[in-house]
Image (cartoon, rainbow, N blue to C red; front, side, top):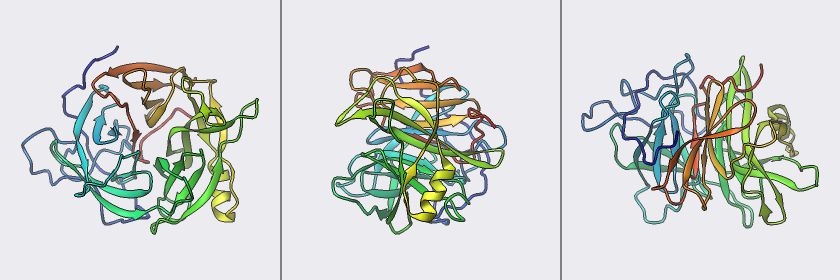
Length: 321
């Protein structure tokens, strides 16, 4: 079913889960639970529901300038507010990541920020954590937290750039190249269409990414494929400092939808957010067969979605054990 406007209902979420960010374990998003001026993304003022206990986690999505929430049970999408870092030079927010504690982090093409999600709809204040060390013409568009113990003892941010390569981002902004996603049968490289995410299956770290085939500067923009990230290869690349192939396998042969710039997941589905300039912004559900189904269309979001994220503690069953 397509819904032509953003649903203005509140999302009710619950308890927090343990987890430590490798950036600032004392900082995080969240309100104090005292506001009665509007719907709150918090149940008790502490932190969003991670979904680790089986409940639906809060999935975040965003445009270049605004943060939204999505409830994977009701499919309700709600505007939270506009990003602000207190300056006029923020630039577009290109992606979002949520750690195990439910803290929201975002990035622009070259900087990492911690987001304070308000307890009632209003501005989303950003605090810069670090600038990312960039190569010439490099810009970062994808962002996700790995689970604690995957790349070091704490959770670590992994970012994807405009060349389709993954990098681990340290707290001081330095990066470690992890690798790319290989090539298709014609020798065309696979690049990130828009996003990465990490979670656990039976206690083991797993990851997903949306990819597209590219030849030169021309990329397939109508049929992104959902792929499992090779976490073992990612760990080896981080330790050896030798980039590897980050693609483990594909889920199906294509979603049938292009430019999926943000992903979040809960249980047996991935929820992807599209940025196709010829169509309205869309919310797409992807199952284990890798095929996408459009759930909602948002014609008022004219520039499309820019990114999405869900806590690393979310219960995700779309990948086999």
